[in-house]
Length: 119
Length: 104
Image (cartoon, helix red, strand yellow):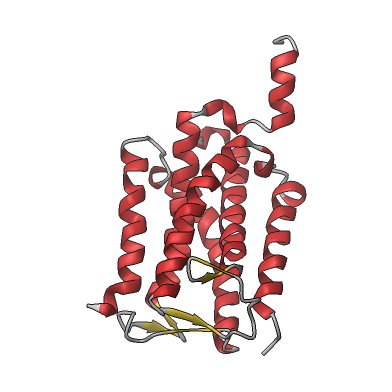
């Protein structure tokens, strides 16, 4: 069972954040183009970093804790990490935005909004 | 092997993420309560994920490339790595939203 360790961690991230989309109305999966345009470029940079770091021996993966599917030197779970974690972050952001819409304004602008008369 | 390589890389990544949000894309998410309230939630789960992956030795680190400070088993550098990953993604997400108001 230990080979499911990393996969279970990722699965947990997806499951825990799923209600944010469907109960809290985060609407991240439903804006999948914008989500892809945000997640993929950043993921690409971090994958390059990960490939270089793994190649240089900065860190390594226990082959008994991953499913054993490797894409290059990285287990498939490590590739998916860079999709799952940023998606979880966007879902959290949008759920908080739904609950507290006024928190989206920069602090300075929020101050002006309170003091300046409405146009 | 670069001594403290991961430490420096994590710091650099954070600096890049902050610069992208404040100067390059000018999304200024770092100036909003929305970002920090969300990050406060995200970071708890990041520590949990990093802690499980490190604590179970799913991922191990060369002790020479990290400073050696650990939070819940994970090297402190993971926190910087995670912050940069999340900050850049959120900034880009906001940028696309700002460019295309109809998509909001």
